[in-house]
Length: 311
Image (tube, rainbow, N blue to C red; front, side):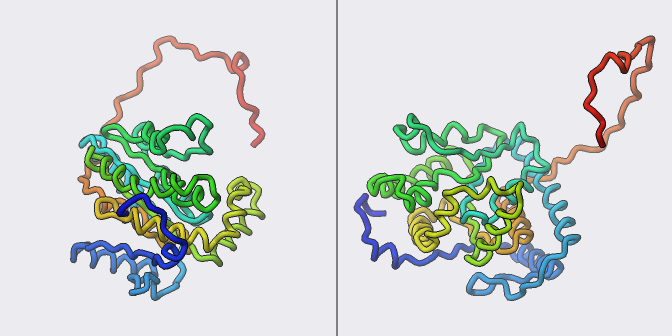
């Protein structure tokens, strides 16, 4: 952005979606293509769509997810040993599957050095702070990984569309966000940004499913319902956001999230490729014999308060 001046709505409407690509090595590219064939999917076409729509079998999905989760553990051990600092941002449409991916990433990781940050509505005090100040306390120290379930990009999305920020605040964010992220990277932070893209039809299906599932109704807030009615406005806001914040130092990586299982595998596999690591799996150890009982008497059963065994 050349300056902090406002852009006309006509200019915003003309912004097109940026396509993000990376240059895989020949060996890795061949490996991924073979894996895609085994899992029933093909490489993306020129329009970003998979030429095959074959559904991924549950058995194949679980097997590959397990393999990737083992690799995530190796990655975490490498991050700890090398004292790296990793930040992963998850943004996208409501019901696009961000939470599901984050859950699968965290399942096998040690929460002492890997954590999820999902902030709620800012307090009145936080609203008066420098915008990024609210997020900086959650940045990682050496040896840590932090996953942001939504992040400072709230200003470019929901705050912009719902009118929770002024035009001046919005364009100031667009101007300063790239500089903020460059500062993070210069400080040694590895920053990876994902945008989860879901079709209108698939989002509608997931919203209806949430209404039917009592354990998921909390995911469908009044804000989500309002956002549903502003689909086009969110699309325009996302395109403008990507135009200004898809920078060389921290590009956006778009995840096709219409198929949840494939989206999880694709995102985790890509994340593993973003941080070169080595296998630090320790050798198996032999457990020593348990200490012999030399007169210890356990507390009587009736003197303890147990959880009722109703199952």
